[in-house]
Length: 337
Image (cartoon, rainbow, N blue to C red):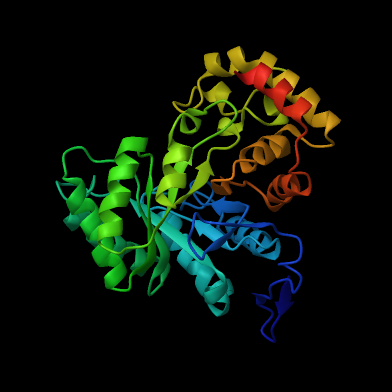
């Protein structure tokens, strides 16, 4: 919602009914409830993007009851620009709602030149978070993640840095991302010994990428952490975009490294069959794909991006039908296994 002040500037007033329709799930065994669908700022929030467009997306998200905004130090492009743009939007629209928001950022990938701008050292993690807080105009984040494993740095150092970040009041909780089950178990053990609240593992998960089902979900159940799933639509493959082939101007048509044209072509038959099941459920394929992930008890939230407010609203309709019959699950499994 928007209201105009006397100067004609549009100010944001959140929808008073924003919590009435959103589903919330517990993050592992913590006290944190997350919206079943969260908003990620990986794309569409950098300096190359339209700031007002990003602002409208975040306003729509919060009006839908999406309280979890997910960032990382290197989101953009250029690096850091998503956090800086978020900071501008936060100052103008969300500062008065800070205690209703669950804000995340991460460090682990390349961020600045030299030996201290990458991976998992104490030097990098603490410096990066200090920079992130400054860019966003925040005193703390709700959760800070190590973005990926670093096999050159002792895990005790990386987890120790996360622990000190919590003790310094710069983050309330910590998480990890892209860790394998054995690494996750070891990290959880170190953090538990340090009495630090490790509550989330952020992992890639979709109908077309199911590696976490092998043992990671069980590991998270044992450690008491929840999962937040990113790339739930397989970079757009699990939408109606590719049902009839690869359209001109789509990601796959541009030969981007994270969505190979041949991979998409090989999946079109599956996409068409899954779309038929979704139609019978009264859903779009994207909505069914999100709902299918949320059936997992350990998944606290599904992380989606959005290029427009309408796209976000459409994806949120996934929460209107989260129940699958055994016949539907069997048919889906037959297609994607």
